[in-house]
Image (cartoon, rainbow, N blue to C red; front, top):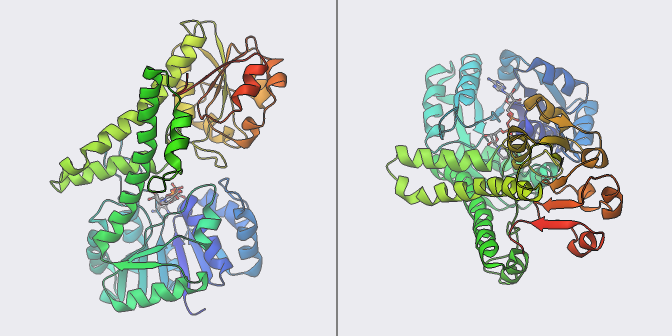
Length: 437
Ligand code: NAD
């Protein structure tokens, strides 16, 4: 393994990338400015929940191939290839992405670059960012054009991050030289025969945002159908099932429910619209405004359904909320539909009790005003309405009789169309779901 790698930014993406690259046999140095996170990682403790990642992290540490630092000087001296895995969140009060973390990482790294190296951006960025960062790198790196930039967007899914990193559908690289392409091909060669699309910077950046825009659109499409089904007394689950047999459509991302959230889709479609506006191509993406609006309307509809079941007002009403993470098998609560609904109900006077198998600590930090329970049963105890908002398997497997024995009234809204409806109705539950009669 000739190349020594650094991974700059050890969040959801960076930790996974660093640990998996070490597992492939590379010597890897992970860098973050969060010293507490780095100390935990050095101790083999994952600061995030990601199934299957902890053993990979531990193997890396034990083999000596994976180390962590907070020093840019050390990283610059160590790495032949530096992967940039910084966050690109939505700017406060705007749709645009905040790419300042990437700028700051390049500004910290570049002045220490005194030997040939490749810097590889993996973050999701507005098109044009790579080109701008390449100029910055050229200005700041003492080694000049011996420090080159490439863009290699990441498509991993939280909850399947290790699997997706070790066996990606495709690898996309935006490069400006054959040398950069050659290095990236060599680095990913141990993954096997993965389709690789080699392109320019702008196309590589756009592939990622286009993929997320498509996925968000598919989810909002079926949720728009759910709205129509509600008006027409039709069943969106059956509709979706019938559509899914058409292999031009396919069944993935076609489950109606509370919609998408998380640290990627919502902010990525907004940043895409903002960037298209700057480029004078805003008309091309006006449909994404609708995609976003449909998505947010599902949250409002969920609150309305819960209020209806509560008898028209949340005052004096206890609401048991199952789920805080934006999706199962993750502790990520960024833009979580579940927490958004819980907060709105709390603001409307409901006494909300939230339970999530993994995301409670994150939820508590972000929303200390809510009440948190230690189990699904505790969250539901005394509830007038129970809401299933994140489809953890543990919730899908709940026994309707057992849960029914602790609630004040057997009323449930299934925000993810995940429960076995006949079983819940047979146990005397008043069952409601989005998009179904
Ligand atoms: P994150 O917020 O979890 O991680 C970012 C990390 O960067 C944090 O640990 C932070 O402390 C660190 N950081 C901030 N400033 C720094 C600096 N100057 N130097 C070094 N480290 C610094 O974000 P994430 O979810 O890992 O996402 C990273 C990027 O990857 C984003 O652009 C995101 O859109 C993209 N992405 C994420 C996923 C995902 O599933 N999370 C999937 C694909 C792509």
